[in-house]
Amino acid sequence: MLSYRHSFHAGNHADVVKHIVQSLILDALKQKDKPFVYHDTHSGVGRYDLQDERSEKTGEFKQGIARIWSRDDIPTEIATYIDAIKALNNSDELRYYPGSPKVARAQIRDQDRMVLTELHPSDFPLLLQEFRGDRQVKMYQEDAFARLKASLPPKERRGVVLIDPPYELKHEYQDVVKAIKQSYQRWATGTYAIWYPVVYRETIDNMLQGLKDLNIRNILQIELGVEPDTEERGMTASGMIVINPPWKLASQMEQILPWLQHAIAPNHGHYKIEWIVPE
Ligand code: SAM
Image 1: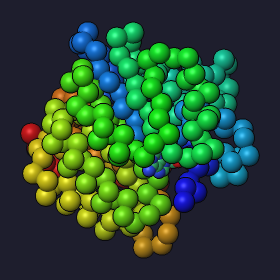
Image 2: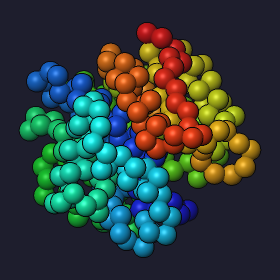
Image 3: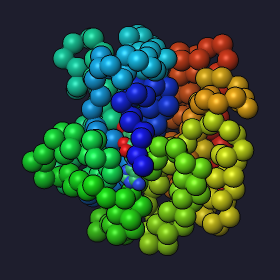
């Protein structure tokens, strides 16, 4: 049963961190002319209207992108991410927010390609409509990890896999670990960027331990919290676990995260950049 709809959450603080990290990884891949693949396992619809009733209902973007959009001290490191949002909005008004596939589409070049999977029967047609006729984008209404397995290794042998499940079910955290194990066996040199929410810290610690137990090296954790950890329900922080990150990513995030925390969660926020397993 698929009940999660990303339109309730688009542009929230978690999307901001995720899409900044994603765009920095793509920036790094573009340093070489050689083609690469962007593989998005849980794509969503690609574009979100922040004035639709779902966004209005939760107002989550007001604690996310809206807090940085009109600032005049945006760090140059996140220019590419901001440009992807500007491309969807004709004026300074923030109305549309790009999902991960649109952030990527704003960055790829003629020689690059994208693979998108989305299972939801209502969201997949919207995704299809967004990229219809785009020869660089292949879309599948298939299970995220089944399609990932079938796609690796990519013919380019360069690229990034974004893994962004809804984590509605407890087993999804360990499903990610299994998917990494399987993917890494097929393609050990790819970059894997895994998004995670902190609802219960223990769940994330277990997922990190599961990844460590795979004996994979070069794993970086990046996190932004808006509240301290709690035992109550609700997401208090979120982050990205990046396997084989670009070499500059950690130092770029050292510049970005203090600014982001100050802009988004000045009172109770925290951030972290940590090597879970060094190179
Ligand atoms: N990556 C998107 C972004 O950043 O804009 C947001 C994705 S949202 C967090 C998770 C998506 O995964 C939902 O749209 C949901 O329908 C989809 N989904 C859930 N289970 C899936 C599965 N097994 N295979 C593919 N997609 C799935």
